[in-house]
Length: 190
Length: 347
Image (cartoon, rainbow over all chains, first blue to last red):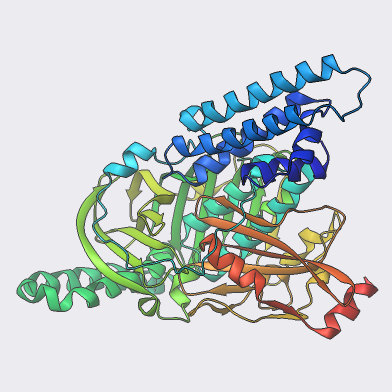
């Protein structure tokens, strides 16, 4: 899967993909790869916005459907030697993607942050001190990069930064064992 | 002589908190007035307690999807901090520190180099030498008492005063001030990072043999102080390229440049508000293409972006315990100096 397809996938998550690139994505030869990537990102996306209701992820699948409808309408000009076969492929992929999105949306991916406290538990944690923090309107959502979406080289690259930071931290402001644990955590796999 | 020195230190260590606890107990009616001060008092104790308390135990550390548990033995013996940490899960390994000497026995984990795991500084100097008063950026309050790993604790909440940092909650053992549990929390109360002793014994003395290396494996030893840079020189990840030829146009209030000994050149690439820290790396873009955006592992955000300056591409990375929006703001404010651009093309 090349960067262009990844970008399309990413754009799809933001409802910003154009029809042409979605079509290109859906005709990619390794649909399993595409599906897996989508599933990972979607899972990460949902988990990072843990507060979101599962229903919100349906938006994404709607986007896929819309893109597919568009594809179906404009299918004619596409010249393909194996017209029928790719089409079936594409549809099965689309269905799978929608299914994956729904599945993840309804909590199948909730085990991802196993080290964390579950949303249920979080909800029951009494917030005795409501921090006086308000995000200003200028705080646009930050583009998220899923660790799972990175290839090995990229992960390694990121790991090094994490490690170096943990090292700075252990000297500058560490809290004893905590900073040490950060270091080990950064060097291990997550 | 040495013995006497140790003794008097321990005396200070134990009698001061006891005395203050007594005073506090007597001053209960004025609790509301003294509250701020007492939280500050516990914070002041935190740093020294981490070094000078003698203890052994097992703690867990969780962030993002990873949970680690580690066994630790720590003592302050003849004026020297000695520490032995043993990983309890995954691959076996241990780290022994005696004063400034660190010996590390760790199997290779994936692609990570053994050298990289050696901490470049003492684990616990930290809060003892704070430059910035924490209370300016966090509201410190006592939040009652509790019990952790069999010890009575006081709970200190450090609530962030703005959106550029996370809030912390610290559980400190009552008689020593030792940190036995901590949370890093997002503004909504979500716990991002969790550290906690599950088993703890605070004691007067731990025998020498508990500080001996027992694991088998490749041993690496290093003396701390200024020699931290050599580990990075492989795989094109050279710290030589981190000459500070750039500056930040913006950083959250209270984050001051902190020494970054691991780079070995005294460059200020780390910034700290006394509790949280972030590091900024600006490097000529390498062969690995990194996506732009933020990733989060527990309380740690890593934000990367590319920037162009005079036809040279740079990768800006901000890593730290700060919210993604703040990390992005810091990364976006990086300005590259002309000299750095020239230097980059040389390398």
